[in-house]
Length: 411
Image 1 (cartoon, rainbow, N blue to C red):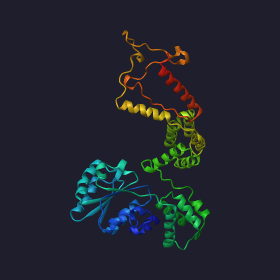
Image 2 (image 1 turned 180 degrees about the horizontal axis):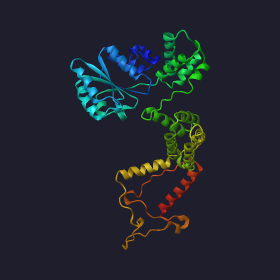
Image 3 (image 1 turned 45 degrees about the vertical axis):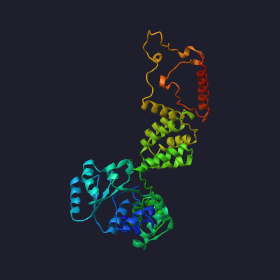
Image 4 (image 1 turned 90 degrees about the vertical axis):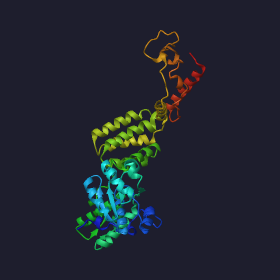
């Protein structure tokens, strides 16, 4: 028997759940289907939210010959065989994983798309603005599909129950649990529901039965997908925003994937990008916590990383050093700077016009006025201190004192 998710797949856009911005009463794809005209499209979004389903609904309603092509595994010859049909009638090619399409295959496909002999519906979990060849993008309309909310998933589950397994008595708590555990993936929700049916010894299924069978949530975490970066970004933004509870939530998601290294690397970046001089000890502590977590492995790694994230979220924040180096890099990349002042070079010159280097430790306070920046940047200011902590306040006080001394050219 075919899997439940396959049997439940909508055949028309009226059957679809979610994506109202595309297939709702005023949705552009609904209007295209209604007018029996469709351009080449790229549909992107997270796994299990209906990209393939929507593509199939489109071709079903238009009643146009269609073929499927996987850009990751299928060959150029297979594409040639498909396009051969366009000599006789209009065709649509549903291109799965379009971001993986090889250049020679793209080059072969493009003229047919350009002429309108072939329409494509590209599917990808990766943002096509970053991953799909510009030549393909320029010949398509790009639409993002959004995650399916829990109520919509429950609606699908209830429909599956009614249509295929109505003899089973299932509590509403079970449907709530499955919708939560599916992580906004309709296909996974249906797979889990079918697993409950297959494994149940009786016709009555309660919440405890569901928890026994479905022991962990579905985590969609593909390093090539936008979701991978979205979760890391959400963690960083939550720490930056000092929301400790949100920070722990996204940490928990990332820990559930059991892939520690990218998480730890991001925490190391956050320590210096977002906390920086407001808490200078966070960098070494982040390094230590990350190394300990890698040595411990899961599940124990959650303990040092959880401790670190709580401290990072509640720590004072400063990006002053991060902004300063970026300003300095901008000047360097724009060709500013010129020659290093002669007195800073290691070579001695007998030129009497050369200013002698002054050794700061020979002066009170270990400071003496002299020019360090090249001539065309001598007045550049990169670092702007913040009053984020007592440490950076102390840096600011010294910085301001030095700036005042510079104005007086104190020796």
